[in-house]
Image (cartoon, rainbow, N blue to C red; front, side, top):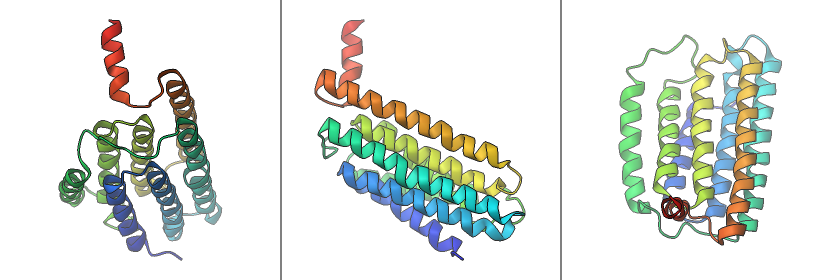
Length: 217
């Protein structure tokens, strides 16, 4: 139904767009599109699953949570915080792309040396999963805005979800949906925190909160 290689290449392109983008609204849309691609990739695994309803349940759950619910919550947080751009990241956007190229190369090198279970839809699955997790971690440590760091957390979770597709035939559906529920709770709490932080301090720069903690101690 869907070409797995095309979807995985699309995920790589979305990861690079996240590294290059300063507009928070655009980053939210890219993470939403990433969730859509993950749902379609779950359907691409359909041929290797014993029960057709399982792939559809996981795909629809992934798309509903990652591509619809999470972006809606983050757009509300973005509107309440009244910010539009990541102005002064710890690592510039051009340098971030260069770091991304290095991370992609490392992920491809590591991925080709890991044994894959039988029936994996594409040999690119593990490298792209590793790359997505690394991009999410990089966004968490290299950006100032709290909402961008929440997006980084979501990207890490997307990479973990993608890595889990290699074991989709063996993992219980309840475990996979439980991961989605955990991510939903985490993002919901983070959205509340972003709103409260902005209301109290008139900004959502995480480094300023660190300075405030140091002054209090």
